Image (cartoon, rainbow, N blue to C red; front, side, top):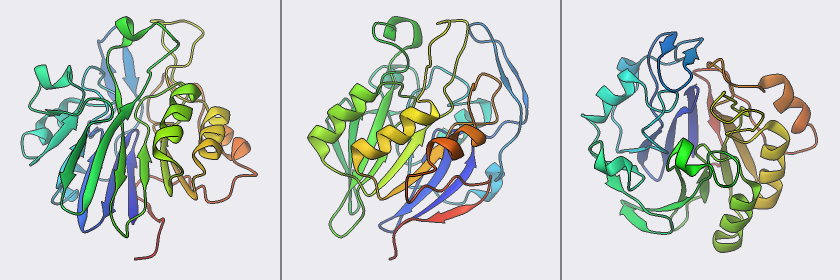
Length: 245
């Protein structure tokens, strides 16, 4: 398996002969007038024209531009399959993947798993979000967290799925005035604990830079994962090889 970090929450996952794209964000830096306002500080490390063919988009949610920006929305029109939340499927051309439901794609089984985009009881403010688990015969088991802030959710997933080979964790401790003083995604220390809970052999953090509302980043990830083997904090455009083929 190979993973290319594009920037923010966006990565290309190559597994089982398939190419999957997470939360597409390809806009240049700029401001987005959503809620209290979000600011993108850096463009992608891979241009949208360089992405190449994609078999499916794994979209954790559609309601926030740091997970689906204007260019990302345009890309969805050419994607053969977009998997996302049931509520996203009412707004965009996506196939709903409710929690614990499955879709077969070539050699992969893709399972929708819970994600909680903030503290308990805040879904009415932040909206519905999903994560994904990828599995297949002879292939690594991969967990893509989406915008999840809850270790209890990670424990639930580990309890049902078991250990994973690769954990792709959204880990910037996002904070906005919408829910003051609360992380809307995993912080660095919680991401490290999530990796331990999942028994992950390889960890690739995403969504920890390129937006102004992240309260943690590369430095805190390096500190939190100092005693965790198998973590790769990639530079934009860089590839990680997480399992030999």
